[in-house]
Amino acid sequence: QKEVEQNSGPLSVPEGAIASLNCTYSDRGSQSFFWYRQYSGKSPELIMFIYSNGDKEDGRFTAQLNKASQYVSLLIRDSQPSDSATYLCAVKTGNTPLVFGKGTRLSVIA
Amino acid sequence: GAVVSQHPSWVICKSGTSVKIECRSLDFQATTMFWYRQFPKQSLMLMATSNEGSKATYEQGVEKDKFLINHASLTLSTLTVTSAHPEDSSFYICSADRLAGTDTQYFGPGTRLTVL
Image 1 (tube, chains in turn cyan, yellow):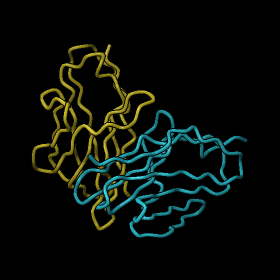
Image 2 (cartoon, chains in turn orange, red):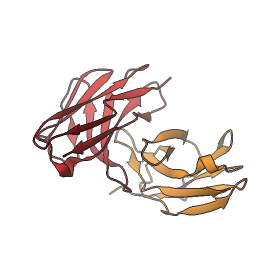
Image 3 (cartoon, chains in turn purple, blue):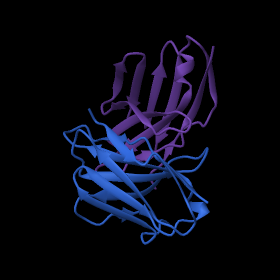
């Protein structure tokens, strides 16, 4: 069974710090990797996707992928209180539906 | 681009009634749409995968006769909760798989169902 593992948190960081969110996956054949942000009571919102090993940057967000280690991470620079949310890692293999982790709750403290 | 809408955003109904939820991709075509359910403080649970013009594929444990899914066009899928009961009260979210290489799922805003 395909699994995506995330630390449930909460992960608390001070405002302005770097938040590091981690995710591991079990299916070595996975090809596409996604990070979603979900505020309480709202639906998930896509932040980034990454397909290739290495780093991908978009504004304050950087996704990192290491397929050999089956590990994907999301870094949030200059964390803001508005970044406080649950971050969902999702992995896709072929034409199968996304497999989501249970999410990591991030709390940015002002 | 990549906007997905849901209607209604919330609904309250009496036990035993049926409720229909619409999911539309507004600015792209989606051959595949997905329906999720999320209970408070729990993770997303995939209910079914819906492909345009064919029968939906339901996840294990999801009653296909209770949760009717129709995907009649490339921009519209509907979920009907039949004979709803209080235990069906939940946050129902759809997503659409955008084509053109990115293989990315975009989520609708969700529908909060409360069954009295």
